[in-house]
Amino acid sequence: MSLSSSLSRFLRTRVHSILKKSVHSVAVIGAPFSQGQKRKGVEYGPAAIREAGLMKRLSNLGCRLKDFGDLSFTPVPKDDLYKNLIVNPRSVGLANQELAEVVSRAVSSGYSCVTVGGDHSLAIGTISGHARHCPDLCVIWVDAHADINTPLTTSSGNLHGQPVSFLLRELQDKVPQLPGFSWIKPCISSPSIVYIVDTLRLSFGSSTGQTPSPTHISFKIFDIDAFDPTLAPATGTPVVGGLTYREGMYITEEIHNTGLLSALDLVEVNPQLAASEEEAKATASLAVDVIASSFGQTREGGHIVYDQLPTPSSPDESEREERARI
Image (tube, rainbow, N blue to C red; front, side, top):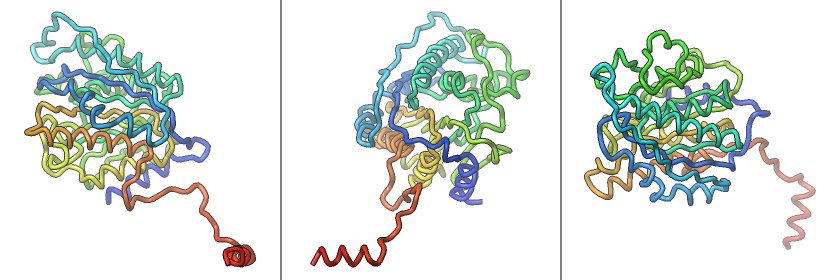
């Protein structure tokens, strides 16, 4: 099953003309947070993506922008390991609680919400905040990993590999209560999350055939889980064989064409891990392309979706036009 045919089939099941809308109101939230993992530098991702021209690109696409700026998360002075393994649980819990409030405020005001991180533990907050106003949302997770470890199955202790386990209703009896996490309520069910795992395979589970729902894309340029390291080198632990540029843009173009996009996360850009300034800029520029493509930017050669195909002029009208030209 090809990437294009599988994605198209899934998205067609979620499109309904009544729900389709043009996305022109976009809220941008910077989330400079790194404590869901151990590498320093991912907190500089939002600044790098902004410097790569994010706001100008969205403005040029006709989006009405609301910039919430880069959030300042409340520091936790003493954040001991949970069970001698889980890293910074209180910091992650509090930061996501604060982020959820901002996302909720943006979505309730009618904006499509773009969150730029920051590490992927932030998905706990973005999806929780989104779900308060769109309880039937669909989550599309573009990543080479499922990020569905629990505090009892993780080997690294990093919470950026665990966000789905805290959000998924079916896993709640498998997830212990971490300090700082008491506010979290599971808000998605397994049929409503789609994983795009690699360049050739989509794992849709039983999600096809449902009523169209607002879509939350959790799109992470992280460890090159999505894109190949030749395209996005400034990230945690690159994995050879990731998405090509064309494949990544195809995914976002198809999602844009549904008219259902309501929120998007772009995380795990880490400028400090680049071997050169050029690598850092290339990764940030790719992040901007991903976001812009999700809101209507098309590649040269990309297809255009028409609500109604144009029709040629009648013979009589064409003849009148020709006479007028002469």
